[in-house]
Length: 326
Length: 271
Image 1 (cartoon, chains in turn blue, purple):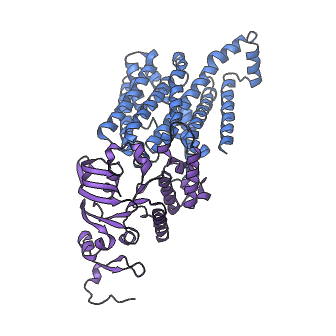
Image 2 (spheres, rainbow over the protein chains, first blue to last red):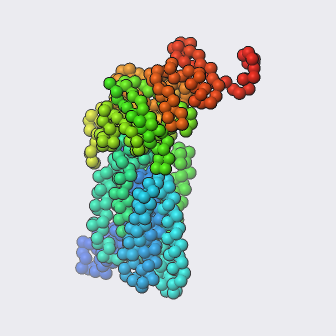
Image 3 (tube, helix red, strand yellow):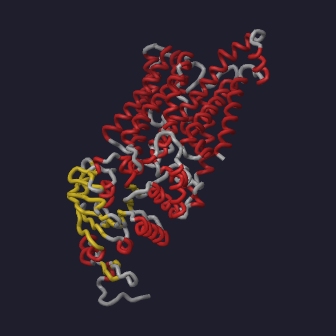
């Protein structure tokens, strides 16, 4: 059953990647794509479009989608709350502070770095709050939500004080978009995401135990207070990386893990690879829509993912709410 | 042999000590029931005994070793704990939940071993859960759910199982079924059971020893008939009761008396 589901998801992922690569200003059929690659010399223009624009863009969307899903999945397990997600926990707020700082300082090219630093900063504050006061996971979520408000208000204040042309730049970052990612950052993906995914999958049992709650975790021989720092660092790294590529893309981290649990069950051994594939494909499709729906304008992908993600989420909720307790 | 011993233990939360100077000994193979009014420190005592709460004074010994010196994972191989009102947020299947009980014995990424699976199969057979293994926990009734959670504790193959109000949400049929199951495990495999029970009469029928708490201290500790006596219960719970032997077991049975009956001289009129 699960094996079949996994094969279906792999097939759908490949399909999503293909759709992403084939679509654009001009639609190339898959056969044409193969022809272009078979004979690059006579299709130099198309070849350049594929290699320089579409494939990196699709790859970028896939990475961001998968990263946000995996970090959402981790946070939902360690906080035992299906509503936990890096954006809700104030990590987005931290990133937006970083973005605002970058814009104030006029360092437009290094905004990704600022965003990354901001995410790490807010994770750090969260960890600090958790360790000094030893609060429960429910309280921690509330602290995160409040952090998010404080940070966002501050960065909104900064934006309103900006000059007009910079204002647009900032807003696009806050909406989340994949059109202005930095190729250098995309290239270091293996350094960041691969180890993070590998560690996450390696410790799938720990995530299962965490999701049983603090008392049961201790009773099963896992000290959640010590172990959750590792997970905060991992989610901070993943989220920071995603934000530095695409700005604030909302909802993926909340919706995808939930959908994955319905597809694959709650066991993290299967949830983790499913989240990578489903989250990646979802954002590839959302981004394909974002860049083709109103040509030649590009809609920020965050708008599309928020819109469809929200609708899908409500539909799933209405269908399963009776069975689930939260 | 003593399996669990409290020596002058005080414990609680950072700013508030809840149990004070508690001492008692629990024999291996016994069913020890902890009773007491709301807020008397029953759960705190239980959480202290399973390393969830740290204690400030005294010593808790598990088989003569201070539990602070036993690493969490090692401890989980001998003692399992069922918290009260445990909520499961995600749709795990029964089998996945039971396998989590093998966590203290597992390592890293590896799939469950053959032994793990054998234990899960045999426990689920004993508990009548075989046909539910592939169901998700969210699809099950309260009584079935509680049975799964008990099974998860048993999969740990504990010597001591600690339960916090395990029957409080169950109807009377499930309450007896649940405690009968525990009792048979105690008889068959010498399992030691430490449980907070809200219902005095269930405690009286099933426990070998009773620990009665009042305001965080031990009010009485001993055999059922020495603790469940009307003058003791009336004093600790601040209410009027009658205690009569159960017609079959002869164990003490507590009858509450509503306030309005106290003015009546004879029996209240039956209607």
